[in-house]
Image 1 (cartoon, rainbow, N blue to C red):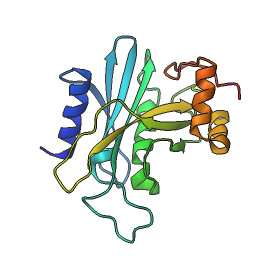
Image 2: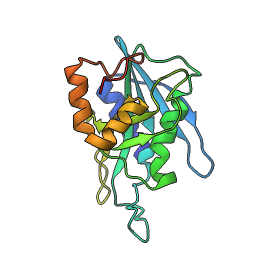
Image 3: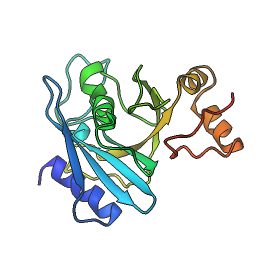
Image 4: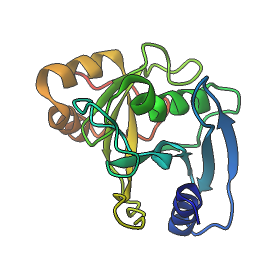
Length: 191
């Protein structure tokens, strides 16, 4: 079973479904990236498949190791989801392709700025990554396991706050203001 089959099986098993709707995003020079759409009650989970196909390279290494290195996929959960054709699948593809395109390593507390709305008419132009509840997918040695990172959409103002104060300060502001970060129509935290 290849890496993507193992990751797909891990995701579907975690959500307790046999299959999921998927959209494919392609970028010049990269292998296709799938975005799974998994409805679950009042929320919709969007999960990338393709980011973990290869390990993320250490930006300081002279040569990329084809086997060793961290691997990650992204998970975005929204209340009610967003409509098809909103541009969300492309945005998630851009985010999960960032290691291959820009040399970044996806990890908890990372701030990724798209510089454009995450989906049509969204006020969110950046995301904050955090650990996901989805368990890692263990791969045969010596490959590192595939981690899942939760994508939290944030506004430009919230992104600036993260740059100045850090991710934990923004999370504290959300908690104090009782902000539901899964609400696609939520207002920005008052900072």
